[in-house]
Image 1 (spheres, rainbow, N blue to C red):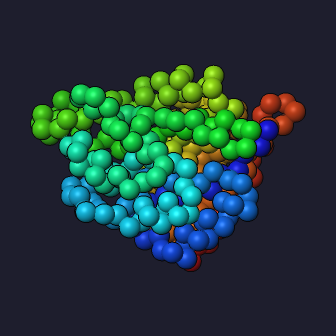
Image 2 (image 1 turned 90 degrees about the vertical axis):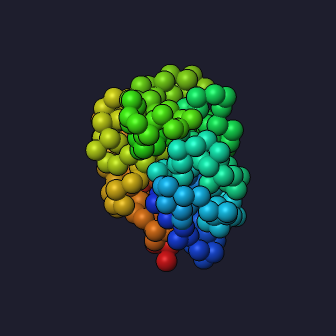
Length: 241
């Protein structure tokens, strides 16, 4: 069993055509899943733009999924969906729920295929509206505790997936807590801190990846399983500029 992932985060609308072509080339050459941990778009937290050109470039590069970061969030469901409507891939957030109905193309988790491998992927978003706060009264969305959402996602995915991957936009502190909370997760692909950091933690071990920001770099991660059932991990940062 083996899985290759290309990981980006915190693009902030800065991905250009050259970077998208480089990511697409890497994806095709390695047969990798191309995943993003959120804050890809240019709009800020409190407004919506008519279109987000970065999503067209991500589509062209062949992204398979992304997490909903704080930039993709909006306190009304209609605005949230407009922000990400041009994405041709799933936008993931396990800890954001609609008061009524669902969130359309924004889903809690999904199962992707990479060759013969089944990869369960879920997203985690920063808590933008604190439960019980005044702003919650004006929102048709609710945040639930990320810890419970992560456990629920793992339970839902683990029987249908060979690998478990979290796309987290909550920062390294929560990513380390997530690795301890759910050690069966194979890779936590993080962002929000705008850091370049990669480390292996826990008995799995679990790979925690923070690939940098503003489309300047990406992480290329290869996961395999040894004869003892433990993960064997190789990871490197590649320059996109």
